[in-house]
Length: 289
Ligand code: PAF
Image (tube, rainbow, N blue to C red; front, side):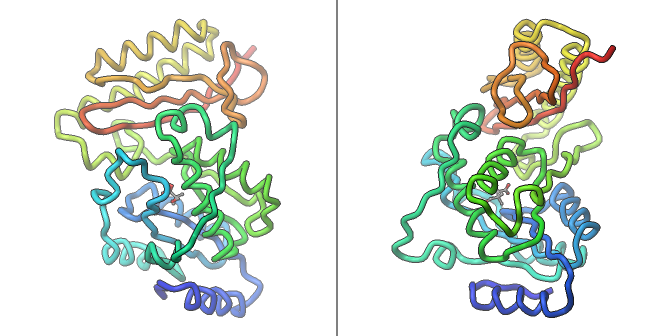
């Protein structure tokens, strides 16, 4: 696996992959600290494309002033070994100066879908995500790109950006969401799980458990506001310090729903325990006849 750290080397490496035949190139963007969830994206990318390019870049623009960018786990050598073992062709690992050279002044802001939920608690976060992902798309020009559904709002923001900016590589329909990978007790895999103390790690299994129970009730016709209030209370009773949001939303626009409608819906939750903020989401289907 080749590792590119400058745009010139990346461009030559991507050109070389394209010269190897008419194969499709998949991009798996990451911030490193790889776990099974990321490796699942790489494996799905291998199934859908001929060459997989992964990127590792801890993007300062998506961290708020009160979020500790310097504490974000960095383990480039270990991550590179994992990607190589999975058969990645190329790793794009630019420095901050390479990604945002002196004088960089552009910001991509996707309104609507990026404003509620995590966008409300993390102002500027999705601008940072959209800006770096647009740059990654332009730099690698992949045929497809894969993102975890774990960050469901991020996926919706990236799709809206690709649609609105007429991105060709990847086209909006070639942005692929991959189902969340979970631990044995149901907890969604996340680089943040490593911050949990042992007792908290046991407590947080309540998040997917309580959400799954809420999904069953919502699908059976439980009144939405009441059921979401019960979900929040269940999480606090299980040891979460607070719940940032527990929302039923339209699965595309992420507009909150007060009742299930015909289209796909999503239950989305963010909750805090100790200094860690966990997010999760699950599909909710309208009551079946
Ligand atoms: O999900 C992530 O790891 C990041 O937000 C992404 C998409 C790589 C952009 O920095």
